[in-house]
Image (cartoon, helix red, strand yellow):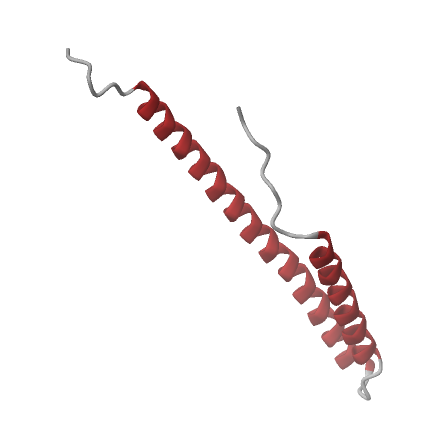
Length: 94
């Protein structure tokens, strides 16, 4: 009756994304740690980095949730249309 939704993301792409995120966050953290400035400026940049990371995760989750919601609405609309077409008899006279 209901078919499972297939993921369009391959395992290799997922792994590449995780590695890329880890490397970029690590490089940025090391860059902020070794900046030739005083501790207050370094701490400000570090807070900015971590705020950007959490905001990115939140945005990604919101985009994913919106796409899943649209997919569910589309499937419900398609099921309603299929039901109407199955019940429709063009040769029936009332």
